[in-house]
Amino acid sequence: MIAHVTGPVAAIAPEGAVIDVGGVGLMVQCTPGTLAGLRTGERARVATSLVVREDSLTLYGFASDDERNTFELLQTATGVGPRLAQAMLAVLTPDALRRAVASEDLATLTSVPGIGRKGAQRIVLELAGRLGAPADAGGGQARGPAAAAPQWRDQVRAGLVSLGWQAREADQAISAVEAELAAPGGDTPAEVEVSVALRAALRVLGRP
Image (cartoon, rainbow, N blue to C red; front, side, top):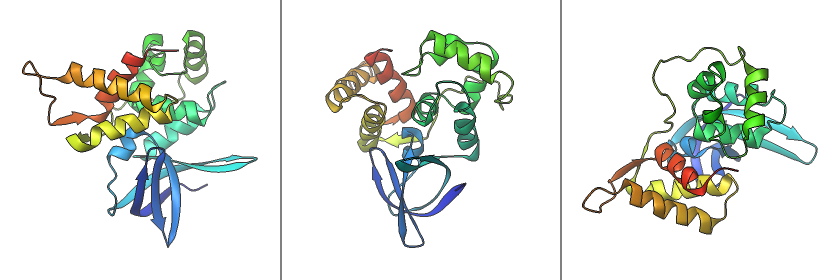
């Protein structure tokens, strides 16, 4: 298992980031929240989980060991693969997932694209007591640092595309989000938290 990678960020793409480790560029699939904390040319440590398939080796990256551990636990539930587990962590923090499972909050779980009511019920049944207790008592759903104005739109767009939407649909949802975030004078705030904008865009796009 590759538990983490550390090195300069060589590139950031819609599907993840390339981390230079000893002269080898490793492509790491990341959530938008994790990507928001990376900067090209800066050194970074990314917690990772290697998913092995017959035809591929995919390295998933996370902002913390807790996210990585939660990602791996989520996949022990029936019907939850790495892509869906990553989508869950793109929308909810580990603590928010712990609270949702502990309180049987199906509405929160079904806010994740790809999870219906039956899937949420199965996740609650199979993961109850296994994710641990949340570390805080607050809302905990916001994830990822704030992104500067020139970047947050691209990061939200990349997140939506990685979750399965077409670029055109993503752009339309982002335009709607900008209208929601606009101040009375019509100006979008200079800084927008990526996680907030992403969840708002997911609401605009609707749920499966």
